[in-house]
Length: 327
Ligand code: SAM
Ligand code: SF4
Image (tube, rainbow, N blue to C red):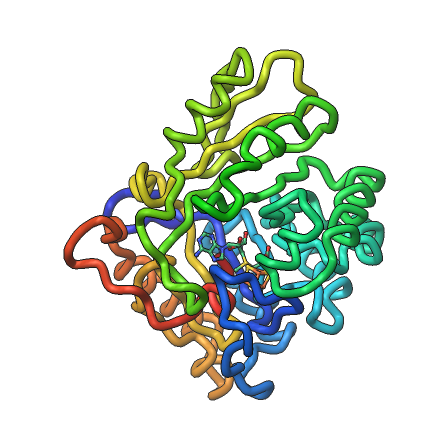
């Protein structure tokens, strides 16, 4: 088992397989996109598989694929099917913007993907184009329907709640859970990324969201289980689905953090908000052994910070964009 110096058990690796994306969400990227990591700097699938195998032997049991947009990387389905054969990985999931999901969902299921998170910040066609600077709301919705059809459950819909942008849709998202077996999760807007300038006045805190949801009826807390992560879970009375509240800013959950991240160019990141990175690719590409890879993992664990510093005067926005970390 893997533990960091604060006795946190680390068993979750979040892998950003690409920094490329087919949307340009305002809070994540500038309109013109970002300078991209050169293709030959991006880890091959073979390299990622090697890292995962080494990590899995040490105690990593959960893997999430993210990006950029993971579904734009060629060969992603075959990669998932190879990942799913690593015995120690008991939970294999993916976060997507859903734009390509309609075409991919059944292949992903067949490849062994266990579950899926879909990011969607509005249920309004025009506002979708405003937020993402691309069209495609209908396609994302069809992707969600297809994910339900092929049973990629639990299906989580992640909504970043931003004042003045989509805060008028809190109740509409919650109503989805009345009619569909979906888990709608509200996430606080974080000071990360090179998109629109983050202002703390635009954060809709999980507490504010909770008050709004309580106005809709009986909001019943659900106890968390070991696979839950940082969401506080609720259900509206009589609902088919669930609600999750994730407050990385107002309710930091660093004490329970169980994750490391792997960037597309082969750096282990110890925290979403820290620029501390451990280069593992260097060893892979210079004939390093599995033991060398393991040493980098242990080094990363030793440097994992106790908590992020948002809301403190020591906070500095990190250098890497969210799309090259994976959110
Ligand atoms: N492209 C995929 C997607 O959008 O689901 C995966 C990568 S994206 C970086 C992962 C998650 O990070 C998305 O749910 C996105 O909404 C979230 N995200 C990006 N920038 C954010 C910010 N500044 N605050 C909160 N969440 C953010
Ligand atoms: Fe792309 Fe996801 Fe960032 Fe939106 S949040 S621009 S979909 S990486």
